[in-house]
Amino acid sequence: MNDSGARNNPGRKSGGGVQHLGLKLLVFAALCALPLYGALSLWLRGVSVIPLAGYGVVSVLAFFLYWGDKRKARADTWRTPENILHAVELAGGWPGALLAQQVFRHKTRKVSFQLVFWLIVLLHQVFWIDQLFLGAHLFALF
Image (cartoon, rainbow, N blue to C red; front, side):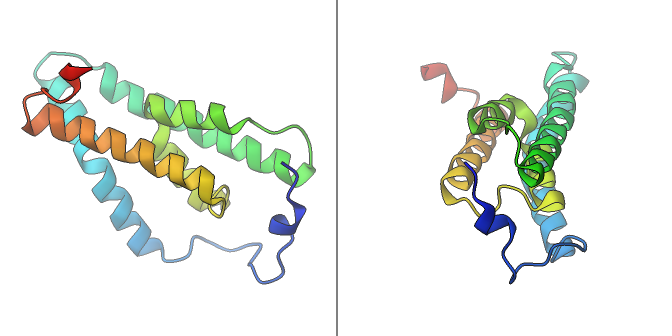
């Protein structure tokens, strides 16, 4: 867990803003389009506001969990377990987690973590494609 070599990498900038901000915002907007459209349509049709509120609340939670974990990593203290971060992402916090990864430059280089993170994002995309365009038949199988 203690990978001080990654934190003290002299080839990596320690400060400054998000690199390639315009491109990253475009990708973020594209990834959020389906979940936002789906959650908004559920709310506007009077079905439920929970998905819309859930994405917002859990994303804020994820953002602060990443912020706290980054602070703990710098202080070399007890860290937030990765399975907790992934559980919050799966619960709908992946947009906040994605923002936090870029803002804090945290968990962006660990391949195993990123693989699980992007599988969670893909799962959310497939869920909303199924809900919006395929008649919710795919997830009815489970």
